[in-house]
Every structure is written in structure tokens, then in C-alpha cells.
Image (cartoon, rainbow over the protein chains, first blue to last red):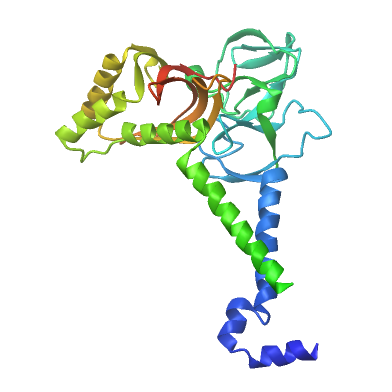
Length: 173
Length: 166
């Protein structure tokens, strides 16, 4: 204790500001912090920037979000979950909402969603349009995903069946 | 004890240099393919200042990454599905794009390479991020490159859309 005090008093003020009273300890703390952040990013939470209009108005372009990688460790993705879907890697991913679960049949009639022939209420859709899609069967281990912005042209809107293995996690915010 | 530590550090340094040196001199096929695809993206990109001679040369150089009988099937934004057959047609299309578009930025942020067990063919799933000059819209797609090792070079012999969503 005394030694530390003596050391700190002998160090110039700028060194204390830059690297602390004990540079070795500061270095260890920095390494620990970096490792912690890297591990957190790799296995727990992935920060993402939203780019595009397909999830309007829920998520605006240039917004920031976090993806919980552990969301489906003990449970399965649920209808209504907003999930990140990997492409060739994780630098660019799709952010979509799950509307169809494995084994279900998904259909759009004049913009209204039908699951197994039953109409569904979608409170998150504020920009509806008259989309039509023939019934599509969701295979086991797949989820049907779509964006919230249904005012986009059907051809410009990426939607469809996502394999479970491609779902990275659930959006937190 | 200090001597042991020094020897250990020296050994670790020599092993590290050997390891990285070996990989630099004899890179794995995955690394070679990844590097070639990154170069391809760089060559496919151009800006408005590109000189006419550079346009021609870069389009020709682009062709050197493809097999003579390459087949390319792409879903072009706003134009729908389009196919190119053969390297010559592809080079012509690249040259035409360089003349007609003000600029083009192509990036491959993610490249996942799988080399076949025979080491002579490979598949690379790539996320493509492209933007045409003057347009706000980004073209983001996942596509699949099929490559073959011909005369020591990895050449692309097929490109297909790899739909992330089915």
C-alpha cells in the first residue's frame, strides 16, 4: 500500500492521466477489457446498424440495434420475433420478422397474412399494401420471415423461408 | 528461471515466424481464393475518372479471373434475372457497364470458401455489396461462385444466386 503511494507520487501527472499510477496494471485492464468485449461480441451480443427500409416503421434506416445471440439457446424462435439472418457471413445480415413457424402454411391475400388458412392480426404493420402470395409450406427447421414495411413492391422486398441455422439471434431493442 | 523464460520466448518467436512465414509462402487454397475474389471486387469497381484505356485494360483483366466457358446467372436490380455465357460476353458486358455507368463500387464483405477434397474445385458463398454512382439503393445479395483450378490458377466457371431466403 505504501509502495503504491510512493510510486504514484513519483510519477509525473501526465503519466498518471495517460496510463494510470501502475502502467502494468492498466495494460492488464485494457487487455482484459478488449478480450471481454471481443468475447461478448462473439458469443453474446452483436451490435448492428440497420440499413434499408424493409423494416419500417419499426426500425428506421441508420438506426443501431443489438442482436442477442443467446436468445434461442434454450428456446425456439417465435412468431413476431425480429431476427438477424446471416448471408455468407455476419458483416451484412437481414433483419426480418418471423411470421411463419415450421410446418405452417403462409399466405398473403390482399395484404392480409394467413397462417394455415386463418387470418392473422399484425399490430406491427403500419404500412400495409395489397400483397398476394400463394400458400407456401414452411419446412421443418425453417421459419418464414418478412419485413414490416409492406408498402414496398413485392419484388423489391426480401422475404421467404430462412433455415434455422442462418438465424443468428433476436433483435433486442 | 530467467534464462528459461528467455529461451521459451525465443522459441515461441521462432515458431511464430516459421508458422506465419510458411502460410505466407504457401497459402491455403481458401486464402488464395479469398484473395482473388477481393481482387475481383476491386477490379469490378470503377469511378468516373477512369481513363478509356484503363477501362479497356481493367475489363480485360477482369476476364482473366474467369474460365473461357463461364456461366453467370444474376438477378440484376431493376432488370430481373440475366445470364452471361462465356468469358467474352462477360468482358463485353463489363466494358459496357464501365461506359454507361458513372461509377460502381463492389465489395465482398463476407466470403465463405469450401474446397473440394480433390483440391481442384471449390465453392465460395459471397455477400455482394454494390452501389451504382448516383443511386441511393444498395445492391446486397448472396451469390455462389464455383471455381476450378486450371493450370495453377483458380478460375470462376459459374456464378449463381445463393438465395439466403428460399
